[in-house]
Length: 74
Image (tube, rainbow, N blue to C red; front, side):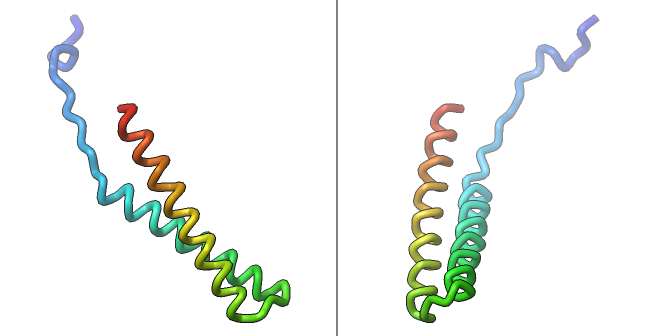
């Protein structure tokens, strides 16, 4: 009555490369938005680039920590 799919084992795939790529892309976008936003608000170019880089680094670190935490839970 349940069919052959109820007793079948499910295979899980862990695509870590995709997690890293997604976190990296989100980090780059956040860094660009922060840098451009700083420049639009009148900050000097070097300060805008530095703030964008800081946001990129923070976002990447926080994202990879979150991915690591979620991966351990599964």
